Image 1 (cartoon, rainbow, N blue to C red):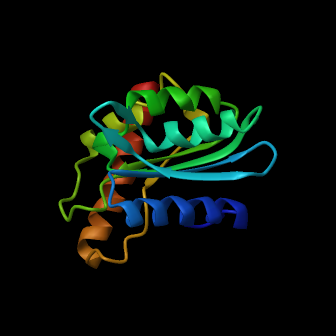
Image 2 (cartoon, rainbow, N blue to C red; image 1 turned 45 degrees about the horizontal axis):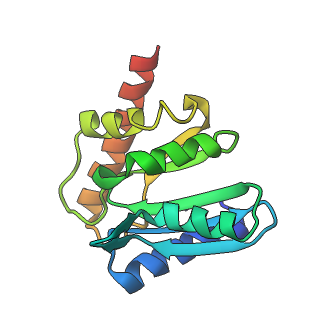
Length: 165
């Protein structure tokens, strides 16, 4: 990750650690407008289903937060919840980094799949505020796979831009 402030790097670290510790499908972290941070994993019980971002937002709101400054969600891109994408609307004044590559798989996505993942967020956040990104680091991928995924990211973003024009 480049050009992230230390505060934003902390959110990535918290989300990554929470996802790793629980082994869940998602890890999330948010910073509220008062600078407090919250980290959580997906809750999946027979009687309760809440996404990691949903848990973070609930913790922040129940603590009296009046707004969010930043959020990170690490997830399999194919599993990003429509409810989580809806939360992006609440953050729409901020730049959103959206993970659109599945770094848990060695299979290289095609540009069409990446473009569809990008486009799934557009009803919730303006295109100029959306930054397609990998959801995490690529150090466990071979150079060829990492390059292929980054090429798919670039090609998918270009395809999504052309469709918007």
